Image (cartoon, rainbow, N blue to C red; front, side):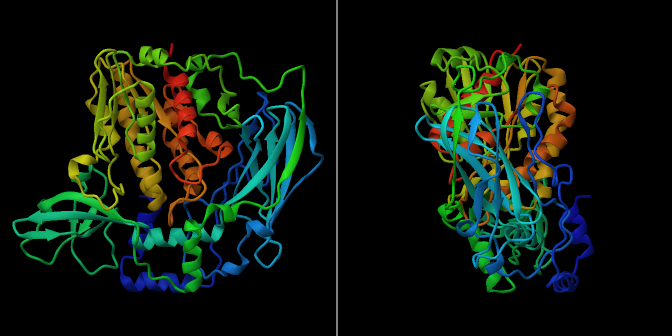
Length: 539
């Protein structure tokens, strides 16, 4: 039983829920840290990389509803970033900086839990690389970079998520199930109803529910049942969503905290930066990757978390995990895909991959919003397929038929034993609006289908696309959860690391920051090629 189910079962009456919230008010929320990395220095590995030390507040937060003072929250404009030792380094060195957080009144923060994104860039060479930040749980952070190119560079920091946001969002997940609203359209003769739907029945609502779990490919899905006796649950025909939902917040402070996620991202960028100089070493201007070709890299090595796993130079992504031997040409991509379908199911950020590949391959587009699409090149005998994943999926105001959404395990189960297709499993952005346990449930269901497909179809290629980082997008939609979701992918797929490729784009999107959850088209171009270099012509 997942944690959220336990919470709701023990608080299954309105009175109990309110008593828990009242009891928790004024108490500091108990955090469970990822102690594996807590307060440890960044270590150098035998491959010259850094162990990632990303921290997050784990799922097992016992209660929510604490009252916060937003004026004591961390403020990027008042916080400091500065070098620990010096500002001149040799290519390949570790660069160390420190960050001290202050609130808006200039008072030093004395606790941890805020999430920082730090990167180093050189606009002259269009170079950039992400850093690894370690939280000391006292308002200070140590950050380490690998000096991967020579020349001048500037280190920048972004206050990605304040811990007050996470506590509040977790509270809303438990009470409302979702930060935005999804509606079903029930339609019959002279009757149209548009009730809200949830990943679990809302015990606070005095209403009956349509259990549409079976219709959602086996994933829990409940819609409020109309009081109209002429309406029944079989009338569900369409889905749409809205970005707004009415929250019963305790005070104006909570409303202020909730608004942070929609604040202009530039307000979270530190005013202060750290300039550094990196000198050449052995007459080379940048670090090179290992000699192992990307398509020969053992799958389990793609699941190892070492940072940075690459960097940008001349606006091109240079992998440090493997040697990219795939030409960036139409012919190379066509030859890779010949006789195959590349399945890119998921959300609009996987549709970006579909669109980018379609452009490279000169395919005629048949895409219409979130409607499933398969684009086929009959001359070169390959296809690109996109399909929206199962609910929760926020379609926006446009109405889509039920057939629009389909679970990725259904797609895998339908592939024949003779398939040579490439399957890229991906879920992320839409799940940032619901409780993390929902994401884990959906990822866990992919595992048996992936195992079965690998066992019966020896020529299939399967990859998992991990989360990407972005600044801020819309109310409540934070890439903070990507840190946790990457862990969930690793944990649930641990038994398949030796058979499935993990596409890790966290460092890539940290090095080239994206303000929106949709990465810039040039960033997508690099992500797509990195994916193709790992998946094409595997031996």
